[in-house]
Structure formats: structure tokens, C-alpha cells
Length: 175
Image 1 (cartoon, one colour):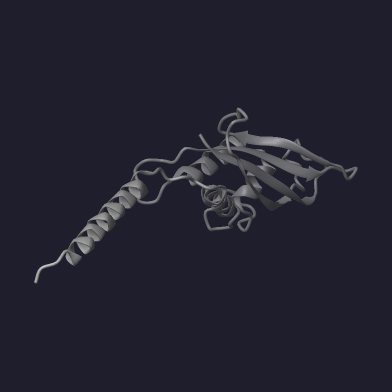
Image 2 (cartoon, rainbow, N blue to C red):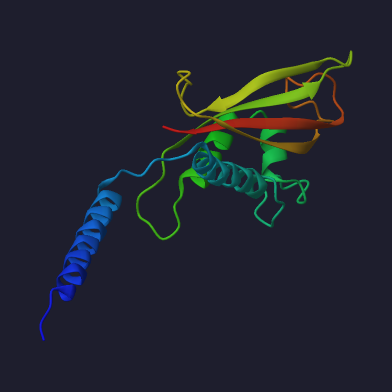
């Protein structure tokens, strides 16, 4: 006894297979769209890199540049001496070194020092940059408070010779 009940199952199976193949093709051929929630991940990585670079500069070690006060950090010594070329070289090295790779990263920066003058007003001065902002880059701001002992009055920009806290702020972007 042969009847035609099996034909409907065969047609249904072939139709389901075609629908699955078309669905898989449509899913695999679409492009990946970045949502605004995905964009912040690269900014967080850039911010962490900048914070790490400032922390390494502001860590006291046995290789401090200041031989008179060995517990002084390299960053505070650079600010006290207004040594912008050394800051630029070390900060750029720390930002752009990729572990396990011979190539370097392309992170640019612009650093500024903020301080309180003798009359209590907040002032600032540029402390170096690797290139200029064009206004099209997506920037990330990192900052660190640094204790500066300018009692010997070595920095001509900072007014008065005293111990003070200054804020170093760096804008970072990939260039």
C-alpha cells in the first residue's frame, strides 16, 4: 500500500532546509555594526595606558634622577627642573612600548601642568606634546597629582619657592 502522505513531509523538509540555508547566508553576509557601547573599550584601554605611564614616571626608585633627594620621583624632578624634553622622551617611550612586539604604538599626547599661584588663582603652562591636535581626534584625559619641592626655586614658571601639589594632565589620542 503506497500512498502520497510521505510527499508532504518531503516538501516540508526541503522547504525547512532552504529556509535555514537562506537564514545562515543572511546572518553571515551582514556587516558588524559597532554600537556606542563598544566604542568606549578602546578609550578605556588608552586611559589605562596613560595612567600607567604617569604612575611609572611618579614612582620613586633607586634610579631616581635626583641624587640629593633619592626618594624624589622622576616626574617631580622633571617638573621642578622644567625638564620638558626628558619628560617627553620618557612619557612617549612608556606610552608607545608594546609588550612582546618590535613595533611601537602610535599614541600622541599633550601635557599641561596646573598649579595655584600666590594669589590663589589656578594657572597652567604646557609641559610638552608629541604633536598638535587638529580637533578630529578622539582624546582621553589622564591626570596625576604630583608633590613638587621647589624650595630651591629651580622652576622659573612656578611662583614662590615652596613645596606644593601640582596637577599634570595629559590628553592622549591615537595618531
